[in-house]
Length: 297
Image 1: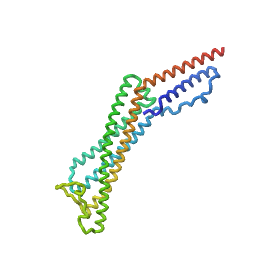
Image 2: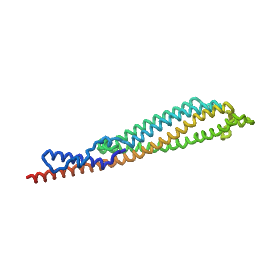
Image 3: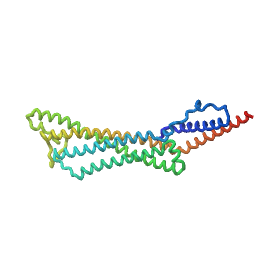
Image 4: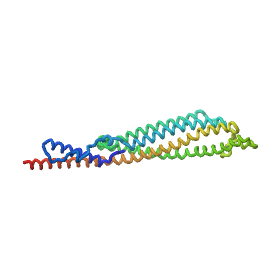
């Protein structure tokens, strides 16, 4: 993503060229040129024109979101599987559990790699660097194709991560319902309720019916299950927030890629504009020098 406006950059270069011409005239003995300190401010932050600040912000947001998402979801899935296995005797196959954890690791690796690649693309398409990289027709065509390809990829990922963010609402709602039921059931256990069923938590109350697995837990098992739920719930919430951050980072990337595509496409026009400014300044300097020589005679 371009940090400085191209017209501003060209104006700075034009000022620098004009200053150079004026200094050369001053060395030849001309006293009619104004002091450069009064006319221009020499650019001291040219490195900013090569720094893709927008892409850096998007990369930081995406990497932070990916790290928190994968770490929290990995731990939350482990706790949830362990809690269901111990409380309701629902036997998850170890291969399935490991597959889920492997998927989380793969997602983390892919998103981090993509973020770094998009940052590199942003650096190549930024300001002064773009004017040096995308100079010929083939290089500009390759830049437009690569930028368009990554735009499509990021858009697809934006849709996918938006769906993931919506799906993560389900365990958060389940966590809220579970905590409310746990508060009621634990209070009844502490008060030694007359009805034994009041001290139990049944999956049938949540619309889950199975004849093969244990459907209710009571007393100590209920307390243990609730404690595990208290540990897993905040992790799901953190994963939800991290997923929303990833969506935000992808939106930033979309803005950067679309802008970079337009900058690469119009790069030749901006370069011609810069050359025209240089030619005009050189012509003015030559005319001014000729006039001064004529006056000296």
